[in-house]
Length: 185
View 1 (spheres, helix red, strand yellow):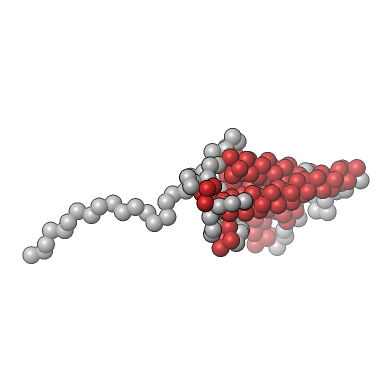
View 2: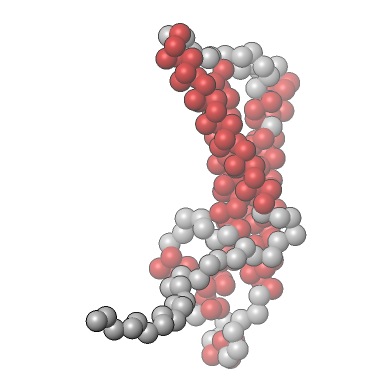
């Protein structure tokens, strides 16, 4: 005879489900943009493989469009990675120490990210203006290259705005009780 088993109580997950931080502009914008870009990239690449397999020819425009889509996809993914705190960092430094130290390091690192993306925004705007003024065209399709380049300053500016929001949230977040009294500046 088998013994009746005791009811199993639900176990809390070791890693709790993460929730997105409260932001004014929904992160779903970048999420859906990434999904659409990745699907478009997969379809274009698949069609190019089929055409190459059956005709021994290739669509010349697929590489150009694919590079453009990958750049925008990377920038959209980077934007949500910063907001969700999934970006590359040295966790032994960022997540150790007192809450005050963690806040200071987070403010410093996010300020560096902000400076980089503001600089990238300004320089990429100059690039787009030069491509527009000198009427550069793409080698495969012959369309103006600023059509591709215009998205770099747009996405860099959006990451800058997201980073400003992160810095504001970090600066306004209250420290745990007793933290400020234990440490001296």
